[in-house]
Image (cartoon, rainbow, N blue to C red; front, side, top):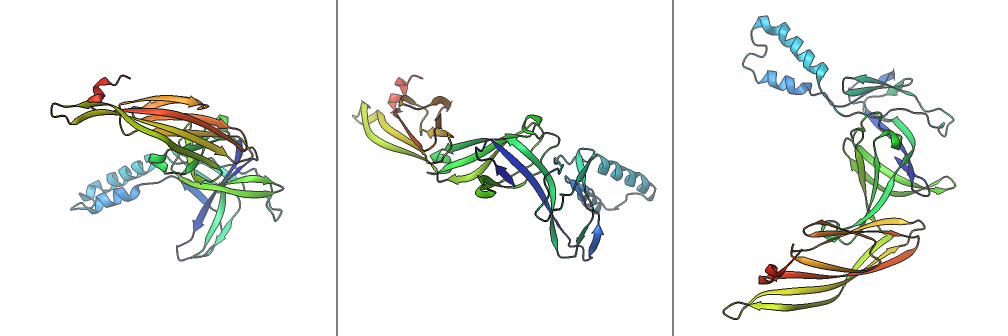
Length: 319
């Protein structure tokens, strides 16, 4: 669970794990330990099952056992998680349980304070970590060819010390993001699933479509010119000129950063920008990007004229 501050510059990041007991036995007052990572010992068992003689010659059994144990101890899991609970007491006046982390090769073992009773067939949610004041960046993206007509909201941070993280990798999961709306109220912002995040790795989470930031490109004019003809009088080349107006609206009460990408169906083009188009850059042969910062409850417009070269006219194109 991620809880953004009102200005959305920092976030409280809380992790949980769900422990499900499908063992057929009730566990009463049991100590709970979590290994974050995957142990692939089943791969070894499957390999043994395919052998003609599962343990080869009898004299090699002890050697095989030792080899398997060595592999098991040295298996790389690669998925781990920051685990430290120092948050406030819960609604019942109880202090959150502390978690002790121990390194096991390249994965981690977490021991949750106290004991838990989990009957068979039941699940219980337990705290995993709690980190406050994680600096984040909000970015709104528009790219019609990739996302359709909607503007998508992205939330990014980094798993390092500067962002109050970085002690261990972060395992994959689902992050639900809320915004502190004041007076103890939260407003839902969006959610995103993500995979394992190594230390010092950048994180960019797609929170889904945003209705309060709108990008509307409009085709204002279209014409063709500079025709070329072959020996039979057929058209062999021409230019197409499209004039666009792009309007960007921010209906939020805070400023937003918007990234707009425009994709072209050819690599033979020239572009002339006009108006307040912010920062402009060419991404690749067929894509350009505009980056704008809009003030709260504001509208910004800019335009561009796109000339594309077709057929024999491609020979007249110059970058």
